[in-house]
Image (cartoon, rainbow, N blue to C red; front, side, top):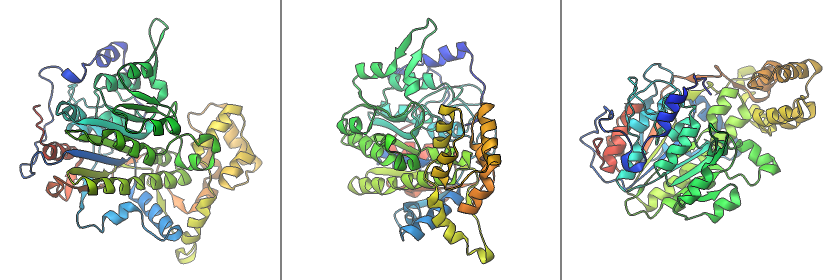
Length: 472
């Protein structure tokens, strides 16, 4: 959600014309500087599953943990990873090349190319040189590749494993590079970037171009189920980001939008059985968005959906022990925390019940209000249980009339104290945070990952575990 400058037309043309999978970068391109650890047995990881939840603060995990313990009498799967002797746990530093606080483009690129780069860029070093992404290495080694996300599929994190653009906002170019680089499975939102207006006024349907290249196109849950096992699949389930899990749970009009676990399983069905294995990145991307919005209900349900991907991955690894599994986050967002409430903090437990009053996200409300141009008090009560006063309604209506970029700020201005009293969830900001984050690894190469690691150092471990050379 960071604001970046728009690239000029010359840059756009240069970048969108990068070569396809057979010649991924120019001769003499910059290479990642991190050397693969010599102690890792090479070539033992046939597959890599990279599960990333974007923007998860430790406080978000704490909120989800206490909610699950109270309502389901069990801990999140993330917590259960700590109890396993076959999981390596590390602490990961998330800085970028130009800031101790990273954005998702720089964080994903650190994993994707092995160097720290400037916030906003994707796989370009600070000197402006393109760096070869890890899925290009995997593809050249004969592996199948896949990207799954609840964000736009052209968003920063999935793109960082695959493409080269100097500005993350160049999502049309990212869509084109996915086709050029022959990513086998692409599942998420972002349909708007696959119908591209040209300078002469014409529109190019890149969805059709993918189909011409042998991809099965899926646009809803039924079509995704029908595409199960197809070798190449493009799934576009929303014009922009996939709607929040809390909204898909409660809004019947979203019943045909698949969730992250469904998309993950579908991707595995397509990639499984490849002779040379696969590299699959799966992102629970909208924890970050809910953190930016300070939306407690959305962030809880978004994390819980991602958490349910962990047992799917563990079951696959159990049946395929030649798979390297990585579970992590790229940075924190918002500083989400379940705070102490009431005398001796005994009010925090009941707040974990009251948070269930929240039925829809701020985004769901914003979409409805923008469609009509009017704040609707009944809709707000339906979503939150809070009955707005005339003064509170006026604050949101003023933001609507001013065409504010996001209405979450107006919601918090008008209802922030009540939402905090309802949920006991507090926030440090609406921005990213610099906290170190958990990194779990399991399978071939995991033992060599150190207890403390910089984000860009993980690239070398993945490459070595797959038996790949950075010079390839």
